[in-house]
Length: 112
Image (cartoon, rainbow, N blue to C red; front, side, top):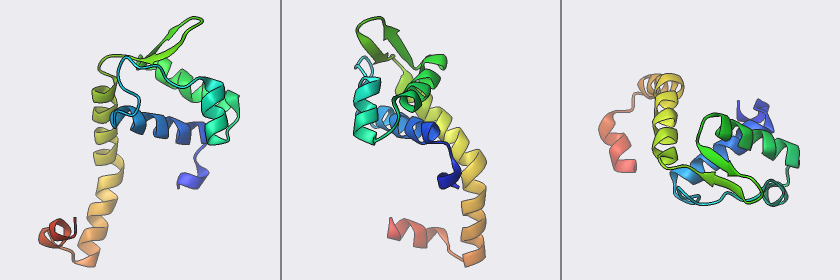
């Protein structure tokens, strides 16, 4: 599944994870398009497309001539969105597999 996803969506997921984890803190400037492209070995246009999604969603703001900054509340909004997506799209499949394999909750918690 992840191999068929466009590169800009994979980059978007990496950036979202970095914001949620605090590697890109609220109020902090994101790496420039060129710097992130070089770091990830990606085309700058691909990075710009990923960044544009964050801007469209109001999670970052651009200060012309300076850079792009993570807005206040971005981590919470992203975390909430990721949780909803996980519970809606991924969890039913995982829950079904757990049931098929006969794994109970105590097995999961002791392995964690």
